[in-house]
Image (cartoon, rainbow, N blue to C red; front, side, top):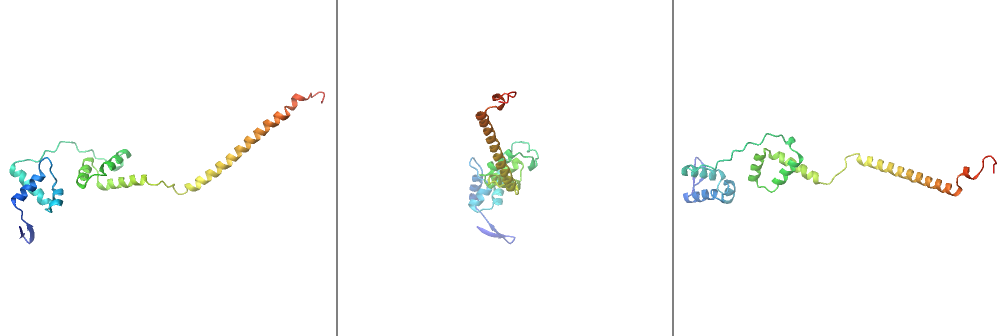
Length: 181
């Protein structure tokens, strides 16, 4: 049924329909009001109100939340790279509702997660040398080639020197300095 209230358009639902929606939000396969809202077209606020009303009329209290200490307040800069990567990987497949719960449990903001995700993707991209590094690399390669040539020349001279000594022998051993022969 539809009607107007204070100039607003209002849907009126049967008690049977309300009861069915509440049952779907309770039990072992409970759905959230948000997911049920997107499926049925009934606003999330209306579904949540029906659930709260049903719980209070039945005397059912909401499940007590476990008493866990809130995570210690940490700045985003205090997280190690390993922890940041863990968070990025764990949140990659989460729905919006699950993501919100995860971020609250970790004490993080969604903007921080976006920064970490983009940094991780940037780190996986192609590595480009910084400006000026190309010139420095070319200079070092040129110097290395020059030193390689000098080393090869020195090695060749040593080899020639040994060959000359083998061919001619020591001049001091063959001649007698007193006789001149």
